[in-house]
Image 1 (tube, helix red, strand yellow):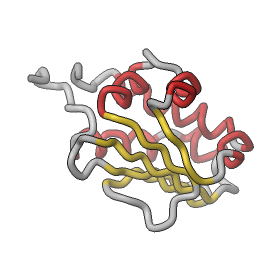
Image 2: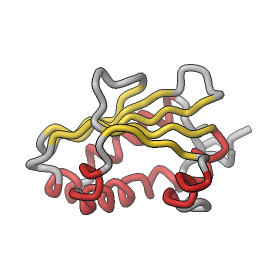
Image 3: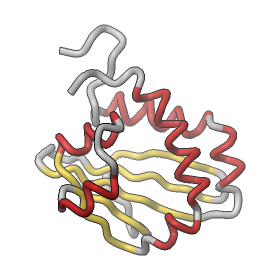
Length: 133
C-alpha cells in the first residue's frame, strides 16, 4: 500500500503528476520549441495502461491512453517499466534482452537527445513521489 503522499506507478494520479511535471519544466519547453513528436508507452499485463507524451512545439503533455499515430512507441511489462523509472535498468540493455521493444522511427529520439535529457529531469520529480512497486 503506498504511503499517504506516494502515487501508485501508472495510476491516473501518477500520470497527472507526470503531466504537471513536464508542463512545469521550462527547459523542456525551450528544447522542444521546434519539435513535433508523439511517444507512446505500452505496459503489458496492466489493463488499459497505455499513455503517451505529445510534444507540439514547446507544448508538452502526458495523456492516458493510446496516441492516434505515435512517431515512436515502447512496450514492456509492468516490472520492467518500474525498473526503468527507478533507473535500475538501462533502456538499451532492456531492449537488447527483449524486455523492452520499440517501434517507429528511433532516429527522432537520437536527433533530439536534449529533449530526452529534459524529460528525464522532469520525471525525476515524479520518481521521488512514486510508491514502491
